[in-house]
Length: 270
Image (cartoon, rainbow, N blue to C red; front, top):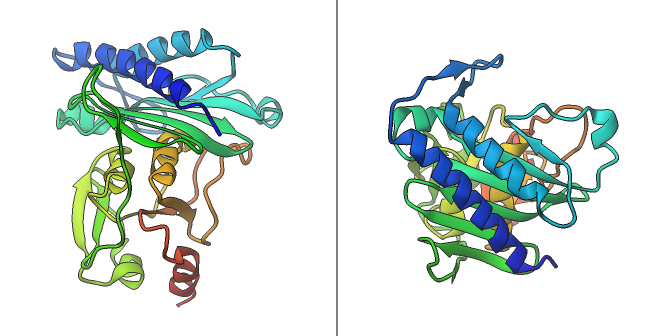
C-alpha cells in the first residue's frame, strides 16, 4: 500500500506545473515540431522544469523518465525498480487548439506497475490522485475537499471515450466488446481514463501508438477506482518492459466485474 499523502503531495506538484502551463496558455506561444512530428511548446518545457525540480526534493530521490527529457538508456533503466514516469503536458495538440483537454501526468512505477498517479486538468482545476490500496480521489479546486471516485457498472448502451486528435478503426472491436449501439465521447489526453474512473464513461480502446508516460498516472487512478487497463491479449499493463517506451494497443475499462480478458481473446480471435 502507498501512502495517500504522498499522492496528494505529488498532486500539489502537478498543480504547480499546471500554473506554469496556464501562464503560457493565456498568451501567445510558438509551436515547434519534434522529431516524431508531435508538437512542442514553451508550456511543455516550463512544466517539465517545475516537476523535475520538485520530484528531486522528495525523499528518497528517484530517477525520472519524462517525455520532455532524454530517457536513460535501457542498460540503466533495466536496473530500476522504482522511478517517476512523467508527461508534463499530455495533449499538446489540444493545448495548441485551446480546447482545454490537456493534462499533467505524474506516476510512480514500482516493479513495472503504476502504484501512484496524479492527473491534473489545468483549465478546469480537476486533480485526480490515486495510490495503490488507498483508492482514487478527485479535488476540484485548490485546497478543496477530496472526493472518492468509483467507476460504474457497464452501462447499456456503453459510452466509449475516444481520442479527439487521433482517429482509428476501433468501431469493429468495440462493437464486439460492448455492443454496436455504444455512444462515443471524444476527449483529449489522459482525461479519457479519468472519465471512466469517475463513472462518466465505460471504455476507452486505443489502437495505435502511445508512450508509457501517456497512460501510467491515469492507469493508477482508473485501477484504484475499480477499473483496469489491459493489452489486447487481456494482460494488465506493465511499464519499463524493454528498450522501447511505446505501449502496446490497449483497452481501458471501468467495470472490473466483467471478464474483459476473455472478451478480448474471443474478439481478437474472430
